[in-house]
Image (cartoon, rainbow, N blue to C red):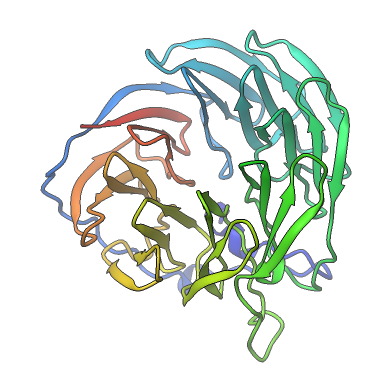
Length: 374
């Protein structure tokens, strides 16, 4: 049931919902693909023997930070895949890891933020008010963390001094949100319950704007849940987000003005390149929309019900992972399969982390793979 947690863990009045096996749709068969592009594995390593469903590696130039098991933190050399160091913490890690410059940050299930330097030495710790449910974001000399009570707490990356806290009232019924905030150009973009997207100044915590991506609708409270439970994507003067049981929308990054919106439900998330926005919907279908207008360009339906990750851009193509540990490479022009790769058979919970030419992937069995596009 871990893979369905982003949908099923509801925090309100102690309510929880869970599907029975008979209600789970049959996954689409593995597509037969003739590879037309070359995507190669540069190296493969392991971090722990299992991976939490919300753990995702993080790039930092020549280094990659990753967490595995329930308490292992590792720093990996990007060029070779060798481990610079690995430490076992005395507390259970929750949410994942963030890295930037010389700072690595993790959050614990007890709400503690821990910062390490590139030698693996702990430099500071700080306490928030509940479990840290998403990976800390290290950016612009700050560490930004999201906790289970809906608060965003921001600390000095150098000293751990608390800089500001943001919190807004929550609706009675909401989805447990594991998505980290996104920081771009000094702004923290935060997807929230009830389909709200908020832009906050990272320097002082001022709310710059807040806008609806999706609006609640339906007869019952459950039908009206339309939360943003995947990270928004910011690129230049555009920021896009998608809500479960709602819509995908792109807005102006400076003022939050709505550029376009389209009906699509997603808990996995989205990616963006210069021309298009790619969304994995709640059925596992991958959709492409024109970035400037929102016009639907294509939909790839052959991966339905394979618990597909959010897309990632690798080279000039689109990559998603699935429940069986396969990576699928799609053409951005028409959504057709142009490549496919098996990993270790462990589910890929979250989108590959890509910087364009390379992407890092983590599987449920603890494997870490660096991919390159040629």
